[in-house]
Image (tube, rainbow, N blue to C red; front, top):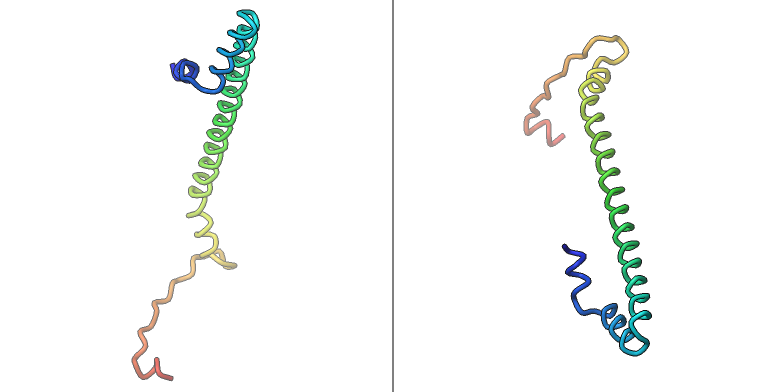
Length: 103
């Protein structure tokens, strides 16, 4: 439907087809029409292929991010275990007094 709307709007391609048909006859106008239709088909195919690639790349990137997100807790647990294989206790930060901050 959109392609039909694009073809029916007056643009340079339609003006070219009309002028060729008037000046050189019906056969030449039809040949120009076939060339214009082939150009539209190629343009739409290239656009659809490009959009398809964008969607495929987006899906792959999303899957990679999800996989990394699932593995993050395990990596953090391994990093917290250190060389001993046991989780290290987290030390609470000490509140410094104002006198200690000045030094």
